[in-house]
Image: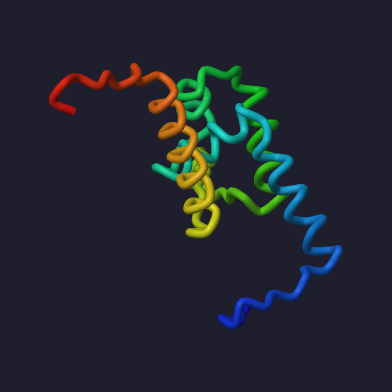
Length: 120
């Protein structure tokens, strides 16, 4: 997609908006967002993912199937294992930016207020 740098943006089509909304809807689940976050760091099989995110194996498998159908993750076979990964750098960027933003906000909210002393 080419974006004009004139500041004028064309509205996306209804189809593109629906697809983007569906993808964001999938990421609205904390469990699925955690899976995408984990896979953005490193590829993994479903057993290790279930251990990492603290989910039941069948539930993690179902979440991965939905994410795969949406094109947010993909898989490949390594012998008998199926390894999942996020190989779209844009998906990785969006997830990392959002998590970093929320982490930063949480850090600011938890920080004690600054006191102003005589020297401040």
